[in-house]
Length: 215
Image (cartoon, rainbow, N blue to C red; front, top):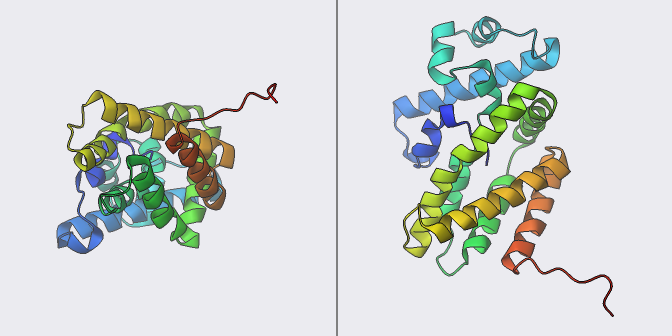
């Protein structure tokens, strides 16, 4: 849940891939290509040594096209293709599930079915965000940007506005659990899924803690 604020168009387009028009599908494809080529170049020659022009040339588009999709080089790393998919998976969960239960089910559905390529890309993005100061700063902005779309879909489930205090509290708690699970897992997709599911289960149970000094 860390899509870039400046690249949030996909999160706003909450339709699944099968319902996107031709123009939107091309946009998703181009954004994915730019990110994939950028990550390849960062891996091969380093983040600082790779320019926007290098990425555009590798993707066979103009620099101006790159900037239409990603306003900065940092954004090409921060953009998270999972967010709009996760929102749709969350919206599709049965209404009898609790809010946290629905989030757990959606997380398992999306991350559990991700391809090896997507898992590798997640790891590469995580490594960059954890090691490069400007990306760590951008990650915090991206986390804040993810509040709105997730508050919208969770609010829908309980018939409340996305700016409702309770809804936003739940979103903040889920994001907190996700952040610490991601840090603990070092961005590794299987480890992240196990950790976030355990964290959300603890959250759903009311965050119980046993006093280690008690009998």
